Image 1 (cartoon, rainbow, N blue to C red):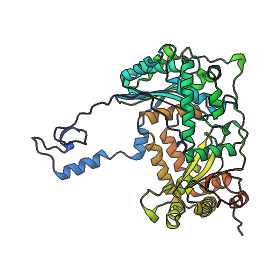
Image 2: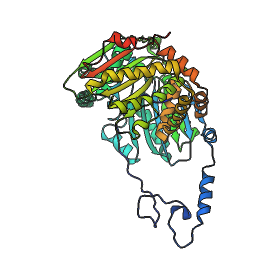
Image 3: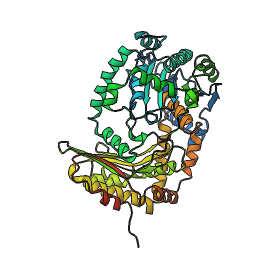
Image 4: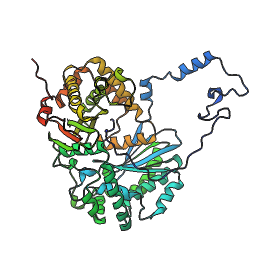
Amino acid sequence: MLRTPRPRLPRRRAGARAVRQRRCRGHDGGFLCVPGWLCGWAGSAPGPSPLALMTLTRNRGAATYAQTLQNIPETQVTTLDNGLRVASEESNQPTCTVGVWIAVGSRYENEKNNGAGYFLEHLAFKGTKNRPGTAFEKEVESMGAHLNGYTSREQTAYYIKALSKDVPKVVELLADIVQNCALEESQIEKERGVILQELKENDSNLTEVTFDYLHATAFQGTALARTVEGTTENIKHLTRADIASYVDSHFKAPRMVLAAAGGVSHKELVDAAKQHFSGVPFKYKEDAVPVLSRCRFTGSEIRARDDALPVAHVALAVEGPGWANPDNIVLNVANAIIGRYDRTFGGGKNQSSRLATLAVEHNLCHSFQTFNTSYSDTGLFGFHFASDPLSIDDMMYCAQGEWMRLCTSATESEVKRAKNYLRNALVAQLDGTTPVCENIGSHLLNYGRRIPLEEWDARIAAVDARMVRDVCSKYIYDKCPAIAAVGPIEQLLDYNRIRSAMYWVRF
């Protein structure tokens, strides 16, 4: 489904040379050449009449939304002997994205090695046993490729965007990263300083700080309470042995997906995977298969008051469903009804979101956003806003009022609008080979299969106002929320007052 609202943006590891696009001689720049007179350059031959242009435009847009969904290429999946899954979506493009998605993240860490996965991500692109030092980066750059990676609470990914002809080489490089990361002591000490500096910079991003606090209080005492980056103390003391043990324990073939999208042949991808990934182990030492413990949700709060800051950041959430729960669709529709807002948006009071209209009319906040962050067996469903110190109470009152309205009186008209918005967001996020590749890898880890857009569309179409009211009542109404607040938050009411606004006394 939709991405979670607080993604950590991947860092670019290696640059690519720009590819020169052929342009029409008649253009003065800014447009790619298109065949014939459609480019607008008259040339030596006369162009068609305006009526012909209008007819052509209508014909080009004749495909319906439903037909477009049906014509999306099929995702092919093959499982190797060691359990590693190979999945691809082939489209006739000159480029492709190939990556390895692994079911491991900070949730699989403990108090002692928290941050090991994030540390490993930094080291993964600093050379392997077969390609030491700068030789690895030069090999990537010689292909004109982009190499990226990220680590989250339940997933780790490394992926490369390159020309389609380089697929076998890309698979070889990814296999080398996963199986033969060098973990040199000199690089470990160098990256240790880099990560410590990043942790300092993260403290200035109050949105990220607020969401980390929200996880810490909502899932207190469990693995999901820990941050992806780890603590400063852990980063200072993690050793090569700690990181190597993390890799040996979790980098197993059944927990990996080799995904590809773009100009790739599935047969070629499978052949390359058999050649380079067959050595990935699938057995655990002493059969000690790691099992995720249940992460309980606790209604609670964390307040980090700092009156020197100009803006208050507040996040409120209830426990949401896991990835595979069908209620996610309905909750995403509910979030689309509430919408999102930023002062930079146009529209003023004429926005479709009732909460955004109130925010504009009464100057309630600088911005707000809804989120539905899912994990394998639980999640966080809520909203976050940034406001002036004297507007916190009013903004919280209006936001909780919108939640209660969804539970009691959501209408068919706003549900219809939200469904159309959700359809658009669903399709728009798959623009390009990299988002499609990430979608394939994440789906196979989260759902065990790639759910086609046609099925998502059918699930969205089945939602009506009654479902929104029922599902929102199930997760929101009279539930204990988790609250995280940072900044000048003196006006944020007591937890019991906020809890009392999670239901209405109705006669």
